[in-house]
Amino acid sequence: MSSPTNGNALKDKGRIVIVGASLTGLRAAEALRKEGFSGHLTIIGDEPHEPYDRPPLSKQVLKGWVPADHTKLPRMLEVHAEWRLGVAATGLDRAKKVVRLADGDEVPFDRVLLATGVRARQWPNPAQAALEGVYTLRTSNDAARLQAALAAGPRRVLIIGAGFIGSEVASVCRELGLQVTVAERASAPLAGALGEVIGAIAAEMQRDAGVDLRIGVSITALEGDASGHVRRARLSDGSTLEVDVVLASLGSIRNIEWLEGAGLAAGFWGVGCDAGCRAFDIHGIVTDHIFVAGDIARSPHVLFEYQFLSMEHWDNAVLGAEVAAHNMVCEEIERRAHLLVPAFWSAQFGVNIKSVGVPSFGDEIVFTQGSRKERRFVAAYGRRGRIVGAVTCNNGKWLEYYGAQIARSGPFPPHPAGFDLPGDMRVVPAEFPARGVPTAAPDVVLTGHDPSERHAEFRPRAR
Amino acid sequence: MRIVVDLNRCQGYAQCVPLAPEVLKLNGEEALTYNPNPDDAQRLRVLRAAAACPVQAIIVDQLDLKK
Image (cartoon, rainbow over all chains, first blue to last red; front, side, top):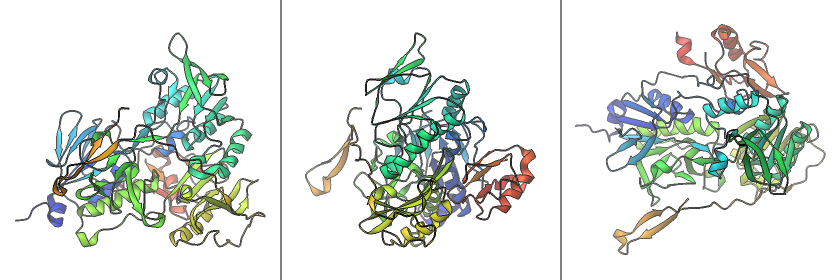
């Protein structure tokens, strides 16, 4: 008798459920079929749409060139899956091995992949967030609404938060000829991801393009007119702005609430997992049937002192999906590790910004090639004498050279490329802002006295 | 049809742009921008552009190719 706990039987007739129908979910489904999985596959997604690509939403789509429903992802092979779209997963019962759905259904599994990703952080005041003209940007529906609002020709757009999304949207606004104010609490755009040295260059780019960039300020209130449409913003420096469109680009929140009570190491930090994508339970013990990939996964990374990192990047979704799929159906000795040297890109103000490694893991920076003035350069990030990241501005073809040094844990400052060297190659502090203190972090407590009774419990704090 | 460009891989050679100028464009000197779901009338141009990419960054729907 074979049981579905045996690797091969699982491959032939197991039941696999993928929760999340975006880039990670789709690529994982395709990878499972490529691995030879011929059992029953269910893909659950809370959005009604089939898998689509998100990076174009803040660029081509907002500009009005590409319709919001025209970013559907190409398919690599037939996945022969049962698609449950437009219905959210609401729970995971590890004892019964079922995923519970919002419509009351239960989907049984032998293996499950958690890939529910992140959502946009809303403007924290619910009444102000509900004003017409206040937007966030994460889904294709968000993009369709914001695109229509921009196309209507607002007098002024206010963007709260100058991370990548906020900066890209500011760029699109200027390309559309719209007046735009960007308000950022830190002292420069992109500072959280790339530090204030690069942030200062991003600030110049914004101002040169005609963006009204306000740094070191926060928005204290959004005010609407009699019909409930946003018309005014109050700033912490006492000034006010007349605005018709507001984008709250305040970063993202991981979609882990549905895992409450599942007994997994899931919290605002994501879902803890090993380098083979297997989820940790609440005690930090690795599970055998539950896998995690994409934006919600947080796993130890060998290149970065084995710290648990989550990487909300496109390449992490693709590689994480492939590794998780492989490990879900393979024999134990065939397991692979998710060893990504992460990379990302952003296009804004006519400049191509690309990065490799984890710049924010570093504390020092050195410009190694090109010219800051021409906005065509490479800068490397270091920590304790080794290179941990690099960023390029309109110089992307050099990224691979630095990526290889990061993978080899090469020295910092790195070996000069011997080409296009800048005049000043001093190492300076990269100036990352102090990490924010999370609010309402849950407590995890230990209960029980007898060692055999000792276990961990979540005590979520009121939001 | 459906495409996605792996923009981590793309190095801005722009060999694709003249082959399918209505689908693939440069924004500035290096940033590629494109229509992920172009009209079927663009199919041949897009396939030529994908083939011409020196780093093979343009990913074309494989199910669509089999049709």
